[in-house]
Image (cartoon, rainbow, N blue to C red; front, side, top):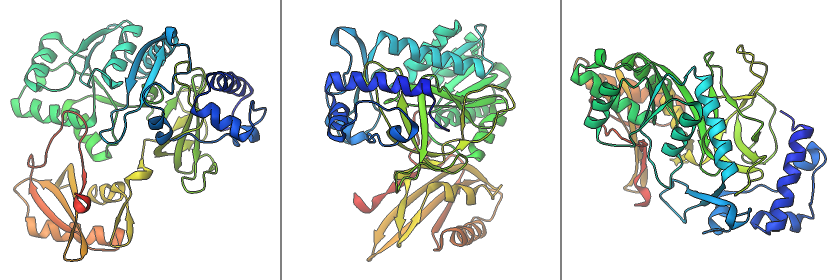
Length: 411
């Protein structure tokens, strides 16, 4: 996916703003002797930006527009390290609302819908992003925020919520609670807009069937506005990315070189019109691919595949590189188990140990199931894990994101 002439002009406009503000990226450009780009080749010579760059700019070193134009700040949801503070101008907020409303429209959501918003509000971009788009669309926002499942279900029934916005983890928790309470016939949900964490096909099917709704993947990250920069359409052939606001590349995470469309790699994003904190060639560490060709829906926006994981998801165990998605793909072959799992890695008696916890009902032989799963995992990753089978509901459920990999070697 080559950068267009219009996008190059927009990048040059942001380069000028970054140089004028003398931001961390403006300094990088000066060191590289770059003041403009005229071609794809020039663009690919632009230095990458990384999360560490953004942390070092704390608190307001990313601010590129004059302070009297900054109307809001948000911060990344990460729990480790110095937080990243992202300033927004009014235009940034308006552009974000436009993108998010477009996401809702692509999902077939209209101003007649009642949108039940469960992600968190505050410094995190989630809840307020879902609400921005809802208000721009003209639909009814029900700004619940996370937690208090009793209240969530009460309001869902009383107000007739038709769209659920949440993390996949909380959507699963709500699915199980609705089934447990026998109130599915009182719930009027038709669609779910799900974001902020990767989720397996098995989990998607569990939520879709449990709630009887259509599900849509929404993409975004705090550094780049927030959720709402892309969503899949009714054909479910990848997420459309709003390339009038951002330019997206896929690179080889090791070499930094672009990979051909269709090949998996790391997502790199350039904001084309962002004022408060524009970012150029920002390495997201999310893994996906650009899907070649045109979507059956006819929209011209480029598409990326669902997020496969992150470059920093990789676990090194017994000298083997393992990704959670590999384990998920093995577990998906077993119809006897739920979509929930947990991986715990520990170091005992001088060696690494991987334990995989899975859930099943009480009608199977736990020992036999454990052995069969362990054999399948070994054939995929090269060593035998310890598989612990537990009853459905034993593994933790989350109202936000679920921690599925716990590395105890460094505790």
